[in-house]
Image (cartoon, rainbow, N blue to C red; front, side, top):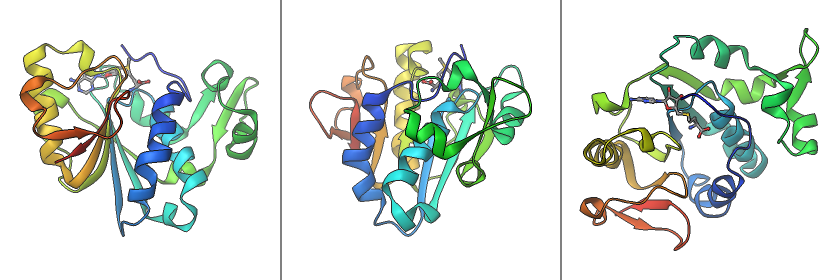
Length: 199
Ligand SMILES: C[S@@+](CC[C@H](N)C(=O)[O-])C[C@H]1O[C@@H](n2cnc3c(N)ncnc32)[C@H](O)[C@@H]1O
């Protein structure tokens, strides 16, 4: 269930860089929800992309990373920010060298404090249908909705709609489709990727 690694979905990160970052950059407070973040590689990959592409506006970024976290261990892992060679091996070399340092144990690397500082972890069950906030510029929810029934997916995406600020973005995985019942709430940003904008 918690399978994940850094830069897992390059296409989604690229879509965010091209279509979402230019809008977020103009906000005074840039609030992002990574829903179903597992043990951190996804919110930290996103934070690195934002750090690379937002210049000074990166100082306004706060990523709320949440997960149901059945093990109860994700909070400690994310706060520590230490990951194995296997989890970091797909990070482009230049980025890796810039944001990671060898940690005490051989084969383990710690992400920089600046990147750790913008990610805040909370334990949260999406099926509670309680949004963590209602002023979010971007919600990223990848490889999570596929574990839910169609009815649960509809409820959760409707909850995301309420959690987004005006014209906020929702990004999910390529294989996930927007349920027909909700298509009036979001418009696709590009025809061939699951990047949507609140109507
Ligand atoms: C396959 S991982 C995906 C991790 C990351 N989003 C990615 O794409 O690399 C699925 C995650 O969804 C979380 N999850 C499953 N059910 C959930 C729920 N009801 N609420 C919040 N998170 C949930 C699991 O704990 C797991 O960490």
